[in-house]
Each structure stands twice: as structure tokens, then as C-alpha cells.
Length: 78
Image 1 (cartoon, rainbow, N blue to C red):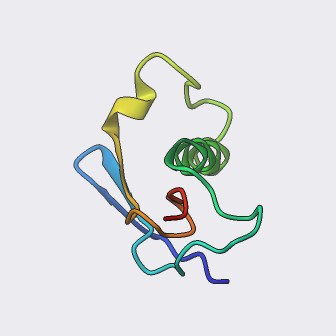
Image 2: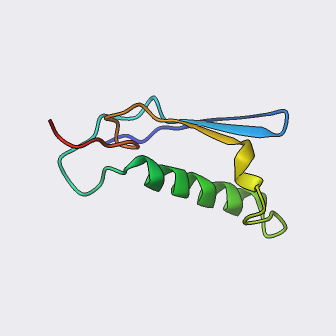
Image 3: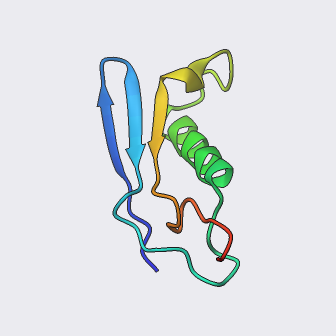
């Protein structure tokens, strides 16, 4: 299973694009959109260091692209 993300930083905003990853799988490794957003936020916090605010609107400048049905935006079977 491949999880791929392309990160673009421009003009004070960050875009994470998970479009290159594999489709969801029938196991407990796929994530719903909220889980993918949370992991993205954690990764950005770790990369930007302890001086970066954990709240206070710092997430507003982040966007997420994850196709429905992908491993990063799993949908119910059907």
C-alpha cells in the first residue's frame, strides 16, 4: 500500500495533495479524512519546530486534497 503526498508551500499557505496514493483497502489501515488532516497537522508541527503555535488559527492556511475512496480518505464499502 502506497501513501504519497505532494506538499506545496507558497504565499504563507500549505497544500497537501494525497492524490497519488493507493485506493482504500479492506483492513484497519485506511484513514477517514479527519485522520488524514490530523496526521498532516502533526507533521507540519514537527517540521516547523516548537516555536510554531499549535492553535490560534495556524491551521487555516492549510488545505488538503485526498480523493474519496483513497487510503487517506476512506469511504464505507458499497
